Image (cartoon, rainbow, N blue to C red):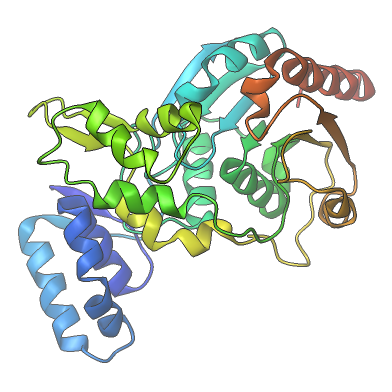
Length: 332
């Protein structure tokens, strides 16, 4: 078989299949396929199904995808799974992850449409939660601590609330369980608008980002997603910019429902120079995470694990030690 297609409605399966062939083309035909999903053009939907089946695709009920990951060591300690933010990847955590191996066995995942993980046709928090659970099952990790930053923090929150028996501790870096205004949409639009076929060097790509971002460090972060294709040596985006832009509204929402709760130990760490977690969010956080605490690292911005790496790591390790002592064991 050429590939395996995620479950859901027939139309969503077809979209996923097309995404395996050509993600950009899949986005362009999304509207017509959505019509098929609504039963408006069921015959067309069936035609697509037969075409993909003839091409060798298998339609099944597996809604998750296999995620790429980095292993940092710490064997013998309880597992910790790190989930990065939007437009990031597991490698953003290289240094902090190694520091955390003194108390955890550390894994950092590339979420779907990021890093070296598969590109898919959708990007929702439910999607990402299912991906994480599939990865845990594949690695035979029944229970782990989760550490999520920004978008990855929302994934971690949702996973803990909906699967409380799979999460021992929760660490959330600079994000609240609430809706946000768009922050990165203009970056994604720039990525989509750059003609990679005509791109000669990284400097030309940065020149386009200068138009939307003044800060040098942020531009360099965005450009970490510009890589060379291993076969053609042509430039490509490591992130699935088209789908991230398409589903950007899904990324900004609060994925939690009013009844979602996680009653395990939970630590929110915010940057003192960041506005992502406001003082007014404390009550909201306590509603969903009644055993949570909030720590502010005053000299850090949104990327708390980079701006204030040492105090960030020390804060996480203190909670790990406190929880281990209160349980009388180091087991999560």
